[in-house]
Length: 476
Image 1 (cartoon, rainbow, N blue to C red):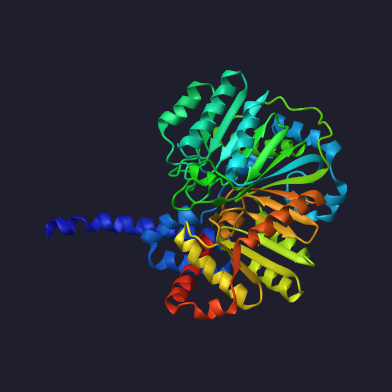
Image 2: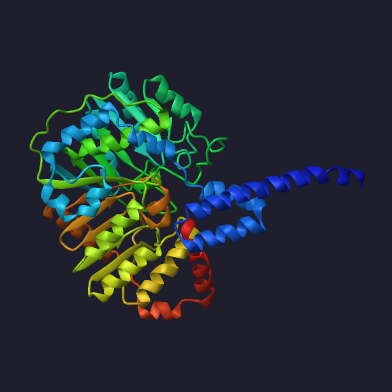
């Protein structure tokens, strides 16, 4: 009994501490609120149950990335060089036509690129490994997930060979996505001269002077060689992405290889992430000119939580809102915000052919259930929703009329639009738009459309679970 009373002062101190932190969090939420619904939920939780809510708020809601903004504002020599070298290749026509995209991106649409659509893992991985092995000056590699399996080991071997040949080789990975990487894997790379860093290496989760970074993940997949070639798309590094997983089987994904001045923009994106992660500026030998490699106009658009506005959401909503004839969207995770849903409903009312292609298989059950709730609502209002049947669908593609195509790392969910660091390639050339259209037509052939009968026969228990999962949309 006496011991219980002796704990009371300690309990009181902790209670006061948590309520003080709750007040700080509440003030910040009021000052930097983006949506009233989400803020009210946080404020009520902070007031009534501060003890579990305060740490959750620091993880999921305390959006403070001033250190990344400082890196972006601190234009290094490589960034200045990149911006100067873009000038002769700017596509003024495309940049003026898509002004919102141009204002959001760090660089405008650039001409004189050759683009190769890489469909599925074997083609993508073979292209990247060949590109690394033939690099002459530098290799920059960035992935959300790197597995220590046969594919991850082959990547490591290629990077080590180039580093031993005297090239500057940098590998950047996300702490959460690649948390299974062993010390032995990383040490082997470093011992061979590869510069390796986790994205949050200098920004640990429990920093005393900043928020926990668990919720802000670098979801970008970027490979650059010699700043002449870049690879961007949906694949990570692992055997499942080559269709070798017994659970998922065929893995449907898309990457793009771009040769030309757009690779400089990819270099700029990587250099910002590298400087944030390591505190060091990349010193690279950049190409002074580019040969006439192709006629494609390409924009490289990095987006993320350090943006002053929700740049990613703004850009995709703008793209949807401009559509007159067609909107085809492919995403493995479809948990859109109200702004995207409103734009899609408005497009359907305009008579636009709106199609959403989603996976039939699930890899994240909560997201999958929430996706069903959103997709069923769209289908019940006349929007065409398809489920891919020939394996797991992981590509991230949007096609607008005959005017614009986007391929990259962005999923149609709040995490990609507002929380993760992402990157998208935008294309306005007819060749890439035609290739993207042909690719998606094949994907639709391997899918089934959700019809009225399926909606009516959906089990009530499933509907309840899906709608309950939908409530978690802001953090999925």
